[in-house]
Image (tube, rainbow, N blue to C red; front, side):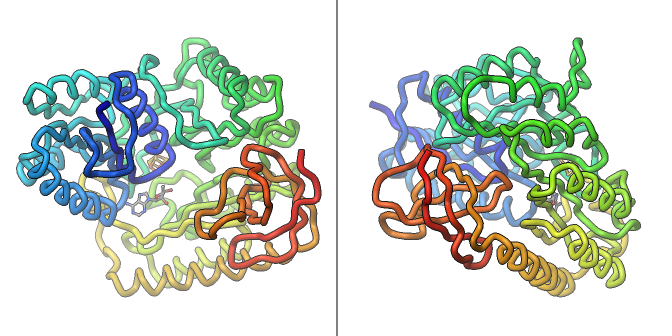
Length: 440
Ligand code: 5AD
Ligand code: SF4
């Protein structure tokens, strides 16, 4: 039996795309292994959002040279966002001539044929330039209680720091009927959580022949029978509608958890980033969400050190973080990406200033996370048990609350996939700890 191993880097979109790579390989009779030495195919599903990701991946790909030397029949392939950039694909080809397959995000559906060709000794280097919606790729799901469902691919926004529109193409929505039948099927198979994926979910449906808003899609999915949770990532603050907020508020199945990347708190930085909203509009949106969904958990992404960011601008970001009170925050140091408008902007920020700002930003959010955690102590919250917590040996399970906070608890039986009411007793950093009061 031939075996495959997939290395996945980057966001949830890539995690789900690796399930498609697995689907293609499984349909060819391969089975999964976690042992590189045993693998007949090793695929790197790559990310290029920041330079650090790219250089780490480059190093990891290089390490497979010795595996290939030991086992010449091994097929090593690279796909995903990094190789979708034609000049990076060229670099990969030159630096690592032992690679058998190099494809991009646009021609993932051709992977099966490429593996066949590689198996008869042919190198397959091909980066497509037509992005479409392919409904014929099999999916081999690996994420336990949660099932990822793409609703829209690509992005039309061209934020000036971001490489995504260049490696994922323009927005393409899947049809509402296809999404609904996929979710129905997943719920029937027993998945307890459905997470809708898109670079910008609020743009859903605008490009369809039969237009449909994201809120309409949410309402339709929430009507599907069965107990399951519905989540989605990511929303764009300029596009999140009151209709969508109302849908979340009205439906118990839609989690009260919104990932709403703000990126910066200064209007001049936001304008240079081409985000198309101001800090005031963002904070007003947060207020409108909280007015309709009082227990909502809002999470966000922020970048420090974008071109031209002054100390004054950065203080505006800290001030926004204080006001918005995110339940958690993903903070990044800006990384210049070739091909984006931001790459050639003046006044790039030095590394030490970026480090200093990210440290202060993380400290600011940590204080807020702790204050929010304090308010949970003693409360009973429903969680979906997702897994054992790999950080602890044995009987520690973890799951998330409706609003997205991670909860650990001890239990003697395997309760993965169950809903449980847990009484929160303490918190350590961002993680809550509790005791099960009722298993559902
Ligand atoms: N440098 C650093 N962070 C970036 N992100 C996107 N592009 C860059 C970049 N060039 C961050 C944004 C985005 C998240 C997925 O990654 O915050 O929301
Ligand atoms: Fe990148 Fe902006 Fe599109 Fe998000 S909305 S993928 S940050 S260009």
